[in-house]
Length: 461
Image (cartoon, rainbow, N blue to C red; front, side, top):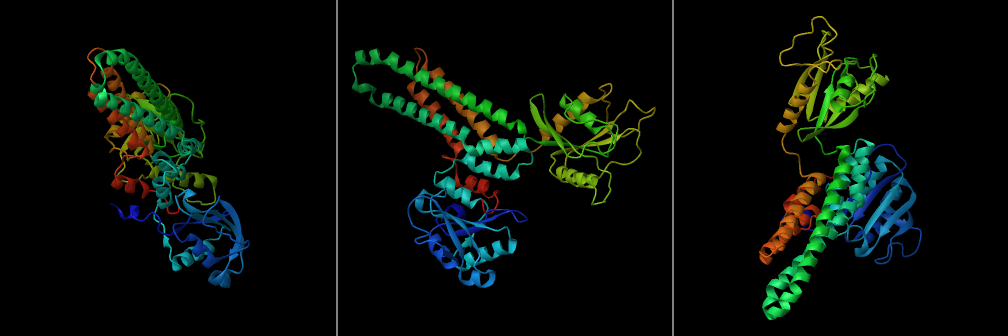
C-alpha cells in the first residue's frame, strides 16, 4: 500500500494558493493536533477559539510567539472545521493571510517546526475522498480546475467538481445493488416457496426488475450525454496546434478545418492575438484544433505582438500534434517547434503564386479552392490515432465506465426476459455493472491507481 494512504490523520500543512500577487494567501492545515498547533503559533481574539466539536466557524486571531517576534501581531481570520465533520474527515484550518510569499513561507516553516509536515500533492483532496466527502470524479475535477486554460474548460471542470454526474452515478450504483440483492435472494430462497406461489409472483417480480433496469440504463444514457456536452471544451482531447509566421493564412486554414468562421481573418499581420480552439472530429477521431498567433521571432518584450508570441510558444509546448504552416510563396523558414512532437508540414495559399515552393512531404493547401483540406484532415486523424493512450483522466474513466456499466445492464435485462431466464446470468451481469460504476467513483479502485491519480494534484489541494 502506498505510504500516502497509511496515515490519513497525520498533521500536514501547505499553502493552498499560488505564489504571486493577489488579495489573499491561504495556508491549510489538517490532521490530529491542529488545535494544539494553532495555539502554539497564534493568539485567538476570542475564548475557546478552536473547540474540538461544533459547527465550522470563522475565528479572529493574530500571530503569536516566534512569528509575532518577527512579523508583529498581524491579525487575520482563521476558518476552522472541528472534528470528523470537516471536509477532510478530521479537523481542518485555513489561515486567511495577506498575499505575502515570505509570510506564507514563515508560517509553513513554523508549523513544520511544531510537528507538522509539508503535505504531498493532492493530499487534502485524498483525505476528503477517503472520508467520503467527495467522490473520485470530484477529486480529479480539482486538478482540472487548476489546469483549465479557457472559460469552457473551467466550466466543464467546475461542473464535475459540483458532483452532478457523480451523484447520479452513485444513485444508479445503489439502485443496481438493490436489484442485485433482490435477484440473489430469489436464487437463495426460491426452494422455500411452493411452485404455485412462485408462479404467481414470478411475472410481477421480473416485470419490476425490467422497469428498474430500464430506468438505470436511461440514467446512464443521460450521464453519457451530459459528459459529452460538458466536454465540448475538449480539456481531455488531443491538442492539434497550427504554427506559423503571421499573415500566412493559418486562420483561414483553421476555419476550413473547423467547418466555420471561428477565427478572425484579415489580410494583416498579427490579426490573431490569442489562441482559438475548436473541436473537430473525423472518422470517429476527435481533437482540439488550436490556431495561434503568428510567430515571427521578434523579442521586443514590451509589445502586444511579442506577448502574443510568448503565449503562442506556451501553447505550442502543450501540443500533442503540431501542424507547421508555411506560405507557398514565402521563402522564409517556418518557426522552430519543440522536437519530438508529431509534426505535419503544410504549405498554405497554393492558389496565389505561379510556382509554389516545392517541399518534400508538405501538404499543398488552398482555402480558396479547398485544395488539400481533406488530405490535411486525414493526416491529422492519422497522427492523433498514433498518439499513446491518454492518462486515466476523470472524463475518460467516466466515459468508459458508463459504457461498460450500461452494456452489462443491457445484457442483464436481455437475460431476464423470456422463458429462458437465467437468474445467475442476470446477477453476474449486474455484479460487473456495479464494479464498473465503482471504478468511476473510486469505490472499487486499487490503492496504486488512487496514489497515481492524487499525486498529479498540486501541493495544498
